[in-house]
Length: 254
Length: 306
Image 1 (tube, rainbow over the protein chains, first blue to last red):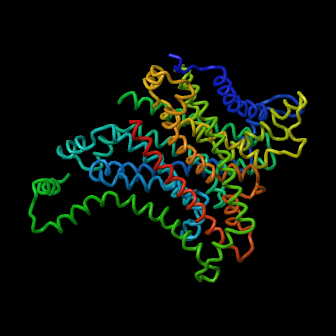
Image 2: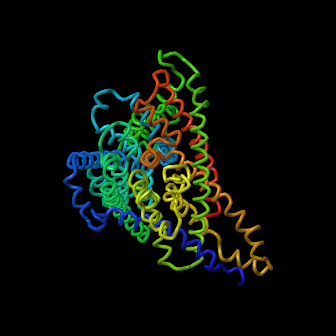
Image 3: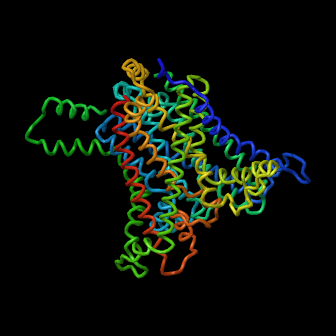
């Protein structure tokens, strides 16, 4: 009985320190962003975001990157992972290994190789970023979709649909997709969060996306940069919270 | 499945025609791979090819001849220092992050407060993915020269910046990195802590074990592989990080990713242009080595966790 663990004062203190460490920057960032002229608190920095130079272009480019990355990710990963579950169970390990490689090859190294291999017409367009973001997101998208497809009986569903004469695109759109809807949403959220936060490749390939723009703004206006940081973190957090809600629901169904 | 495919399957299952086995095997193999072709082609073009190119160029000089001088250079002078600094930074942030992450994870497990656990778990998932430029600015607002905590400490008589310390130094960077290292530790170690069964504690207690003995002989050995594995993952996580350091220090601390970044941006003497590839190759090798260790330990852990 003496060994039953309890939350004693030692552990409680430790947890308190960690909580303080995580909450303080949130509070401080908000306080900092609300510092107005003449020691008066105001939220005018947030109001200035939209009128800031370059804002429209940055939002436009980032949005385009998000859409292209998500589209390509779904287009490539959903059929691939479905195929793995349907016909190539033996290759699952290999596919998983390949999809995890972007965790071993850091973006800062990958960008070196990309600049050295890609043809000029691709290097001249920011959409090369989207093409690489698909790769960077793969460790997460593979896992999400793999878990989603592992939870349903793909083989039976596909055989039934094919047996009743539906073509492959119908199988994907009306059988597979609705059954792994939460896994698809999960990988979309992760991909969006990744694109909105990716700084390394964008800055080294000299494109102005949302994160690199914040860094640029920060060189002259710290208050505005902090406000933008809060804005972008809040957005990413909402996405990630939605993701964990989706995951919980998926687990609940299992 | 088309009728022909189904026939092939049935034939395969019943043994089929043994005379044409190799042809059939080839057909079946191509059947297995064909749906994976887009995936293979895509990762070959956008991952394998660029990576292979980095490895190749690490051994080439400006005039396209084979050379070892890039590799040699990357182990000398400021680049050797960068590797040392990167490894130090990753080690310290991994160990500190692992300790605090473990304490937090253990505390919420033993507290048995369900809602506390849910909050910490969700927050960890969110914070572990927080990095880059916004994180850097958040800390500038906290303990930068005009940060809230800096000002608060000044009010009680502590001047953080008196001794020449700034947020933009080695220790400052560690403080910032912990913001994504601790949550990652919580995520990775929670399942392992959950795996410590209450029955083991009771069994040990019944046999008269003390608290120290329980940790020394039961919990310690069980938690050591997952803890070490998590340590390796945290190491790799911080070793590869570029954005936060770049945004925060603007290159004042020599770290390998930062050096590569400035080589890409062209802040470099002409004959060092291929050096970046050697540094990149070095990074891949170190992270690959560490992650292999992580995978091995992970598999060992999975054995008793499931």
